[in-house]
Image 1: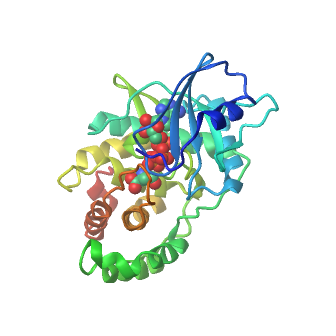
Image 2: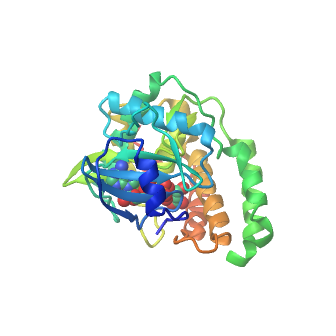
Image 3: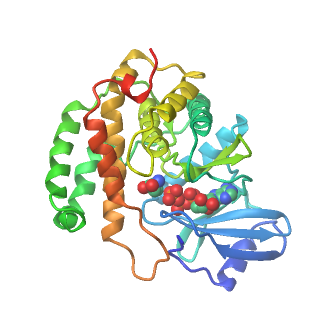
Length: 321
Ligand SMILES: Nc1ncnc2c1ncn2[C@@H]1O[C@H](COP(=O)(O)OP(=O)(O)OP(=O)(O)O)[C@@H](O)[C@H]1O
Ligand SMILES: N[C@@H](CCO)C(=O)O
C-alpha cells in the first residue's frame, strides 16, 4: 500500500474545512501505487481521491499537473478533475505535505492487458498528445536522458546487490544512450507514466486516465515507447508483437508517426526501459522505514532493455509502414 504519510482525523477535518464537500462518510488508504500517498475519501458530496505528494513531486510543479488535468478535462479527455476549495485554490498542505483532492474516476485497471486494450490505450495517448498541443504551461522532463546519470549515481554502489554486473551494464548503456538520443523529434505534453494501472476501463471501453504527476514536455514518441514497455510484454518477459501492433495502430489512427519518430522508436524504447529501471532500482534499495509500499522489480526493466538492444527497426514492434 502506498501510504508514506499518516493523516490523523484532526488534520483531515482541518484540511477539509476549506472545502464544501459535506461530512466525511469514510476515509481509507489505497492499496496501490508507489509514488504518492493516496486515500479514498467519501463525503456527502461524493467520492474523491486525496493525494499527498511525496518525494518525486516538487511543489513548484503542482500547478502544471493541476492545470493539465483541468485543460484535458475541458477537452473532453476523461481524467480526474481537481476539486477547488472555497477560496478557489486546488492545492493545500496536509500533514506537512502538499495535498490536493481530485474527482473519483469510475472504472478498473487491467492486470493482463489484451491487444484491444492496448489499441484503446494507443488512441487515448494520441488524444492526450493532441489535446495537450495548446496547453499553456511548460515543464521540462526531470527524468530524461540528461538526468539518468545522476539518478544512477544514487544507486550505483549497491546495484550489484540486486544483480551481479548490473552497475557495469547500466553504465555502458547510459554511455550509448547519451550518444544515440535523438533531439529532433516532435515535442509536446506527454503523460510519461501511462502504465496499465493508470488506465481505467468499464467493460471493453477505456473510461479514463489517471496519475499525471510525471507529465512534462518531451518527445511525443517517447511516451509511446514508455507504453510499448508497459503494455506489450508478457509476464515471461517476451515481447508480444500483436499487442505492439495494436498499441501503435491505435495511436496512429489519430496521430500518424513521422519517419523520424519511427526510426527513433528502438532507442526511445531503450531509454524508456532505462528510466524505469533506474527509478525502480533506487526505490528497491531505499524503502523508507515504516512506509506501506511494495517496491516494483527493477530487473523486469533490465530484461526489457536487453530486448530493445536487439531491435534494429520499429517494424519489429509491429509497426506497419
Ligand atoms: N481519480 C481517481 N479515481 C479513482 N481511483 C483513483 C484515482 N486516482 C488514484 N486512484 C486509485 O489510486 C491508485 C494509486 O493512484 P496513482 O496511480 O495516482 O498513485 P501513484 O503512487 O502515483 O502510483 P504509480 O505507482 O502508478 O505512480 C490507483 O491505482 C487507483 O486505484
Ligand atoms: N509506473 C512506475 C511507477 C511510478 O513511477 C513503475 O512501474 O515503475
